[in-house]
Amino acid sequence: MKILLIASNTAMTPYPVYPLGLSMVARALLDADHTVKQLDFLEQEKSLAALQKEAKTFSPDIVGISIRNIDNVNLVNEQRYIDAVGDIVASLKKITPATIILGGAGFSILPREILKATGADYGISGEGEKAMVDFCQNAAKNIYPQEKIIFGGKNLTGKEISSAAYDERIMQFYLKSGQMAGVQTKRGCAYGCIYCTYPFLEGNTLRVRDAAEVVKDMKHLFEAHKAGYIFFTDSVFNDDEGFYLNILHEMERQKMVIPWTAFIKPSRFLDVRAVELMKATGLKAVEIGADAATDITLKGIGKDFDFDEVRRTNDLFGGQGIACAHYYMFGGPGETKETVLEGIENIKSLNKAVSFMFMGIRILPGTGLYDLAIKEKIITGQTDLLVPVYYVAPGLDKAWLETTLTEGFKHNRNCIFPPDKLESSLQFLHKMGYSGSLWEMLLAERKRKPRS
Image (tube, rainbow, N blue to C red; front, side, top):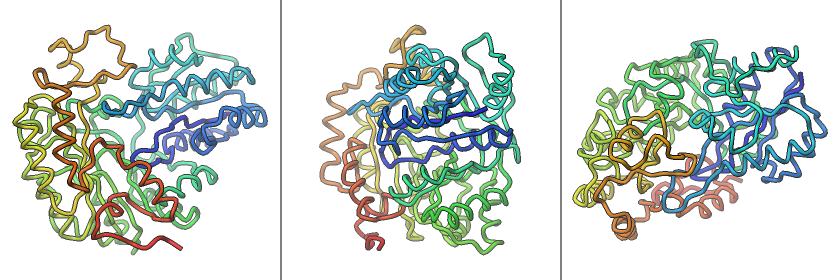
């Protein structure tokens, strides 16, 4: 069958991200002998007419649309993305009789609501590779499921998680924004953060890819696509079990040094030797997932570390000359005026780091925060969460919180509130030829010359 896959993401903050999940589904379909074409809405300049033209030319039997995010989780400057998906579906239905099926992480969080809002024919909730292949194999026999939402079955493990079929045209579009390309080393999340959907979407057991296959992907991106930076897309790269060390040792064995970055969890298992190994294999910058800025609020969101561990982790990387970005959410469970003020000072005390601050925490089903929000009567079981609802600790005034965060960080160039404040400036830097992580650009002592 002929299958058109479309990445619908329109988010550009903090940087545009290659649609890796879409390309992994494409690989599964190609391996099953289907004809596949990949399109990206951003690369098509968000033009519905351009998508229609491509669809007419390709004449697909099935269209798969990937949804990465529902919204930008930014209470101060909300942006919703589902309306754009609805527009894509409506425009395609005007010019093709193809069956339209939705998928992706964003869809899987609220599948029934999104399917209804967009008018698509079907949706896959969960991992899409096997489910999409099964759907297309049956559709070729004119067999379609009675239920409009297909819930993913058995999760893929090990070598079943294959390399992505990276699309050259789409890749070159994203490489213009920082030379960064994504690679996944594992799926699943074993941690208990109460706001996070990763365990809900991917399960709480780590499913690790073969290290040699991961390194092969990196080589391919670096050599064939001329990527300047590898971004490991795992929810947490440095898992407590130490699987990430297999990747580093394989890079070391192959004498591979490629600039890379990843999400890092503050952890007592992380030491100087591990960071030195990361740097030796090409690590240039990290995104540290602290998410709260005091011991009280870290405990409130289910973290298994305190702020001293956050500071130690930051200094481990900073001491090796590695640029660090942090993300913090104010207003979570246990937040008070006192913890807000303490958190501001804690963040400002971090050395060689850029920090992005969010106000409130987006409430999503399948999380502990959802259950807490119902218990505290912030939402009910019937609340439409397709419209963003944010948890702000009871008794904490939103206007006071926004003013306090604005005033608290306004004189610190490395502390960004709201988190999209520098979006246009960062996009300009990328257009001028700067490559790699944005954190290096923002840190004064890490200034570099533009690429020629």
